[in-house]
Image (cartoon, rainbow, N blue to C red):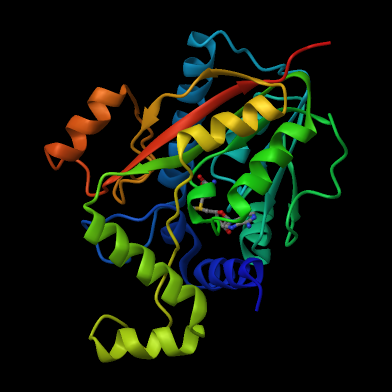
Length: 286
Ligand SMILES: C[S@@+](CC[C@H](N)C(=O)[O-])C[C@H]1O[C@@H](n2cnc3c(N)ncnc32)[C@H](O)[C@@H]1O
């Protein structure tokens, strides 16, 4: 099984088990049902906040144009973006996520298109076809080899003058031993068949009969993201820190300075030792 197939089957299983919960987890509660209205309200607040942060960084997207929400899930942010832009598309690796996104947006007066993509890249999308690329809490779950592939694709499909806003963890503040253990666990999950990892979890008393919601967590250092942006001739407008890797952010995205992000880790306000950044990028106009 290729890394992409494994990534796709993990998210398809998560979507079938409990899609809303897999998208927004909460460390303080056991797996529970989300109220759909409250869930989608987080998307409206998030999109408002990101657009405000973009404006503060001097980047206003072209609302008359077309957006892409990559890794859209059930359309939490896609539905909110569709109210702002003339057109848009949500893409996800999971068929069930996309089917749910279509259902949830059925009655919306302004609706994005939704599409499944299970390929290493976005080969159906021509160069320069999108005005605004959005991607939140997705790249962190991609296999490390695919993270740069998709960031390059975001910049390729951007129109000249277009804006990309994507988030990825960039640094692990855990000790070397903790990093090694996390790396080992993620490699093990990537190598063993899912029935065996479910069996091991059960033996350890962590699993139930049904496969648990699992997700890989991977980072891409800031210097590597910056190098990709440079290689594509794009400008990095800002790269604020966020609380996106906190397992109980429950969709309440918060922008921070590096100092604030470090303080949140040191004081135990967050349960994650990964620092995460949102990259605001502009492709130069001709
Ligand atoms: C934590 S959820 C976030 C969903 C959405 N971005 C949101 O904020 O509501 C991660 C999403 O990424 C999708 N995903 C994972 N790997 C992907 C890939 N290779 N290509 C596209 N989507 C992917 C999953 O199916 C899932 O819907």
